[in-house]
Amino acid sequence: MPALTLTGEFVDLVPLTPAHAALTFGWRQSQRAANLNRGAATVEQQAAWIARRPEAEYNFVIRLKDGREVGMVSVTGIDTEHSHCEPGRFLIGDEAAVRGIPAAVEAMKLVYELVFDRLGLQRIFGTVAADNVLMIKWQKFLGMKEEGRMRRHYFINGHFQDAVWLGMLADEYRTQALPRMNSLIAAGRRAAALKPKD
View 1 (cartoon, rainbow, N blue to C red):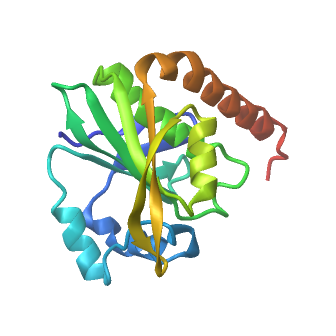
View 2: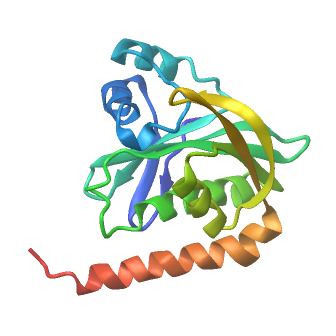
């Protein structure tokens, strides 16, 4: 896919490049990434992995308006014939930087707008390791539905875990997810307005 920047109110999604290897590698080594599939073992491997991303993917870094890069997210498996894709690789790597900012929810909103409004797809789906309870809860809160489980599908953190299969349809995005995301972003806007200026 062509390089693309998605612009929001609090964050922008900018193309992931090999120049982000050290930053994203550090995030992948953090405790926040403990329930993700094992990634690269070195910064060099991370740079090579980024460079090898196929053109059929969108891979983004989440950037705050002040320029700080705080996380990553991707859109993979884009299938225009069957009208679906898989958002994933979502990780907020700098939790302190996004405190009080609706960065995570706006990043997902930008991804959903790309998928459903710009690409015109009808369905998104993905799996989350069962131990990643907070991510499953958050994705369901944003409108994903649990569609099933693949038993003992992942070997992460020294043991097998189920893969929780989640999905969302375009009409569910528009009637459920989008109003909820807009409400959370509006709350962040109000909080930012009340915050004392430095």
